[in-house]
Length: 257
Image 1 (cartoon, rainbow, N blue to C red):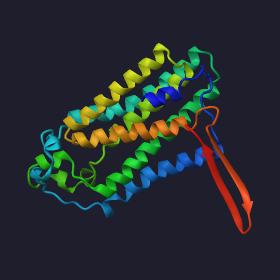
Image 2: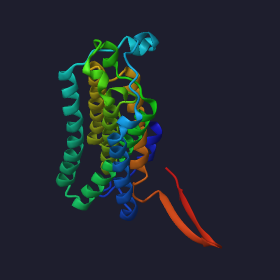
Image 3: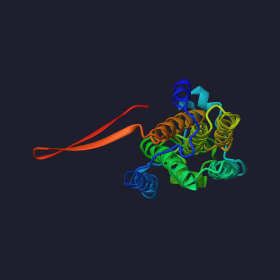
C-alpha cells in the first residue's frame, strides 16, 4: 500500500487517465467475453463431486462453513451492484462539483470498468479450473437441489469479493489522482475498503464462500485493479513501439509504475 501511495503522490488532475481507445476498447470487450463465455459453458467442464465431507476442509474454513441463507445472499447481491453504481455516481459527482471536463468522467468510467472486468475474468477462469464446492453443499441435506447446480462447485475464489475490492481500489486511486491527500481521497480508501469487506463477510454468512475464498478474492481483485488503473494514469507510463525486422516485426512495451 505504501508503494501505491508513493506512486500516487501527484498534483491534482482534472483528467487523471490517458486512454488508447484502439487498445482499451478491444481489451475491455475481450475481458467481458472472457467473463461471460466460460460461464455459459461451465456445465461442460465442472464436475459435480458432492456430497462433501467437512472433515477434508482445513479447520479455518470448516469452522466458518454455513448453511445457505437466501436473505444474506440477496443482500450481498444488492450490495455488489450498489458498490459499482456508487463508484460511478460519486466519480460523476466529483467531476460535476469541480467543473472538470466530462470527458474525464468517461475516461474514469472506462478505466474502472476495465479494472473490474479484468478481476472478474481472472476469477471466472480460476473458479472453473479449481472447482471447489461451496460451503452450503457441506451443510445441505442429502437429495438437496443444491447438488445439481453447477455454480455451487465454483467457490474458489469469490467473485463478489474480487469485484468489490476491484471497484473500491480503482475508485480510490481515481479519487486520489484527482485530489491527492484530500479528505475525499482518504474517505474513498477507507469507505471503499469497508464496503468491500462487508460484502465479503456477507458471502461467508450466506454459505456461499469459505473465508479463504473471500480473502484470496479480495487480494486478487485489489491487485489486478491497482495494476490496470495505474497503467492508465496520465502521462501514460507504458510506451508501445513497433519496428520492422527482416521477415517480421518487433513489438516492444516499456514503462514503469
